Structure formats: C-alpha cells, structure tokens
Length: 328
Image (cartoon, rainbow, N blue to C red; front, top):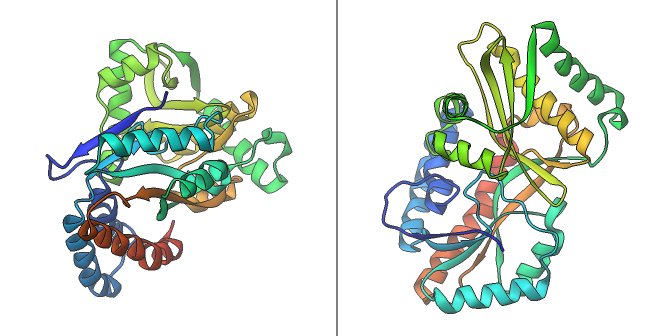
C-alpha cells in the first residue's frame, strides 16, 4: 500500500510537493533571489517565462503521483518490485487516462531498482534537485574531520543547558508549538511554496506513529522540533524547526542536525537529508545524489506529450547545470 495524490488543476498555486508547476516555475523564481543572482537573473527571465508557458500548455498539474506523501521527500518500500510497479502503473493509467503519471523522489543512491523498474514501465526521468545521502554506519566510523563536526555540534546542547525529549506523543499544545517552529523556518525563512502543516497534522502523525517526533527543550519551553519518517531502515526528516527568537538561535540548527545524525547512528538508519544547506551537510558526511521525478505521458495527447518533452529537456539541460552551479 502506497499513498498517492491526484491533482485536477483546480487551484492556481499549490506547494511544490503536489504541483509540478510550482516546483519548476514559482520555486525557481524564488531560488533566483535566494542565491543572489543579479545580471544573470535578467538573462534567465525569458527562458523562465518560456518554461511557464509550456508548463501551462502541458497541463502539468493534471497529474497522478504514485507514492506521494506530500512531504519534501518520499521514501520507497524495499518490497516493491518491477512486476508490482507495472501492475500499479497499468491500473493508474487505465483509470486516469488524462492525467500524467509521476513518481517523485527517485535517486540512484537509494532507488536504483525502482528507477530501472519505472524506466521499464515507460517513465522518463526529469531532473528535480540535488539531495544529500548519509552512509549507513555509526558516527564513530565517520572520517575524523566529519565525525568531529558532528560531535562538536552535539556538544552544544548540554553546554547551553538544553535537553531532548524523544519518542514524544504530542499533545495539542505541543503540536501547536511544533507547527509554529516549522513555519518559522520553512515558510518564514525559506519559501511560501513549501508544504504547510497544521497542528492537527502533527498531532495525528505523532499519535498514529506516522512520524516520530523529538523536542528540544530550554527549561520547559520547546525551542526545536524534529519529525522523522522511516521506511524499511531509511529515514528522512520532513519536519524540522527551531525558535528564531531564541538567544542561541544561530546554533540551534546545528544541534538539531547533530541529533538527527545521532538518532540514525543509534538505530542503523540510512539517512536521506533532502536538499538545502548542501555545503553544511557535505562537511558532516553527506554525499550528493541527483534526484528525479519520473514522468509517464505516453497515453496523453500528442500536444501534451510534446510540451512535457520540452519541459523535461529544459529541466535536464538548463535546470540541472544551474542547480549544480548555484547549490548552497
């Protein structure tokens, strides 16, 4: 059993985890400002406008996304095989003949078998982003320089008098605080195009064991929060937030990421660290991998197939090299 999202293009702007248009247009426009493009920005506006033009004509958001949790990163059950992928895709295509079929978050580092199976089902890869993967081994076995960085970050919490609560079943007040801390980081600092989660979402995910929460406390006040998703020994952290008004706000992110590393180390989890802060994560042991959205459009009209083909070409030939050049 895997989740899915089905988008009918009834809304103009949706978060990038359910909207290809937002991912490749609205998000890209924001990224140009975030990375500080100046002269180059004016050169990129015409091709960006062209991307938006073809995205609209391709009706890219009329799409059915398989195994889509709506989170920044989707993890895949290891039990999925080529025959099961073929069966699922055939059923989805038969019941949704006017929808493009997508599979997000596919990378060779974790999903090489899924990648090959989807190619066999008629999917084509479309570059989405660079992600960081961490090795499946304890912190003590990391190279010395990378291990030292993690241990240094980990030691900041006790020095500041902070403590962790792990495996928390959130109550309503805690869930409200987690929602606020996530919003401060992902919506306030990063992008309004990121997923938005309500306090009820956090409450239900915690108490249904869908996500596993840890809280960083300064006295009795929650100043940091983590929400981890684990599938077959692979983890990702779609929920992360900290108090930007705290006197030690500048080091809270380092404490949070060290706790992620420690949790994965103690539980033998391989870690998918998503994208963003790439240099910071590489310094602490992350390995860069290209991630793709797999796209199947062979059942659509010729006009939509042509537009999708151009979008894929733009993502591969323009988006891919720009991402490698400007990633931070």
